[in-house]
Length: 469
Ligand code: ATP
Ligand code: MG
Ligand code: MG
Ligand code: MG
Image (cartoon, rainbow, N blue to C red):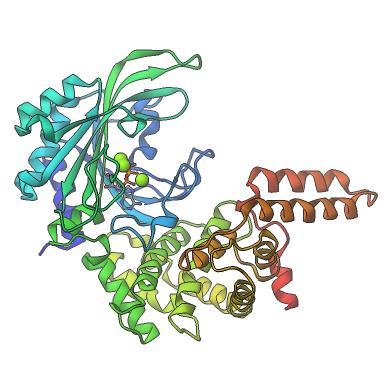
């Protein structure tokens, strides 16, 4: 059975043999793109090659890119633990053509790799194309011999990619695998497409247009290819599994979590182990790339992920810090492919242990308060916004952690009430500042808070709040 490490090598080796430059993953913090919180696809490091702003000594490339989708346009945080196919951290393997080959070869490469080198069963595969893209539909018919009913035409943005409001864009074609009728879900474009029966494995983007400010488009002189396939998704298929979390790497981390908490990996705590395994990867890789937990921006997203994982460890009955003890398993699984992980191991362990130790006390008390608040409510009522705000302000519970906790009980939070409580607190603080002669500073401070978004920003200094408790 091939491991994820083997599958990555097979992918890169295939495109290497087909004259692609093997390029290393870029860091999770994009180098030249302040608009993007984290690298969330393979094309990010090649943006300037697609726009033609930059030229390199290669026109074909392949990579396995570290990606985090835990904020912004792509946010899979709430899917973790619930779907078979989503992680906050995953590897996106891709092949890229910068004005070199186009649709014909891209489809040919994908089909050959999947069905010949990876040996997938052709009868389980189906594809989507953008509804007007007859060219792609015809190539699929020619290259793969797929019948019309397995070339599904989609009219939504799911099959039309764009780099941003302006710039390169174009139709895309996605390859799906049918895991069979035992699993709930429907084909792409159907009402049940969110289920896990038909799993999207590979997205092929055909950059052929350029969009302008006024919404008009023109054909690009330089046509390019950008593709992305989730390593863990193709890994599940090649390991005979349905669920990404049953692949070798994820399984090893789940077992490490079970061992560290002295619980059963497949018992009722399974969902907690899945969240912990996932969040261990995203938090460790983010720290290896220089993000540290803090109260704003990227560091706050990292802290939110850490705290969510810690709540799940708490639910498994863990009394002492757990996450930091799992880092050696992660390094054993992925340290060879990503040496930065091993280099940062000591720092990652120390930061996790510190965060876990500090959050532990407020976590216990906050969860106690949450339980109490729920007891006083109707069975299906939302948690009042003020309570969620108190959890946030006094106990350092990010709103999404509270929502995650309530979701298990089929409840939600009154987010409008939360925002109102936040606004009131701000207004009070603003009033307290006025006349102090420091108004200018205060305004800058609030601008930063506003720019980060109310619910994305911890606002008042939780460090102090925690220290006082
Ligand atoms: P989905 O519809 O399943 O959420 P997507 O359309 O958002 O996937 P793309 O943006 O097209 O995904 O990314 C390209 C590929 O990366 C996907 O086909 C999939 O194999 C993989 N991928 C995307 N998001 C995730 C994730 N959160 N975890 C694991 N793999 C992912
Ligand atoms: Mg998605
Ligand atoms: Mg999709
Ligand atoms: Mg997609």
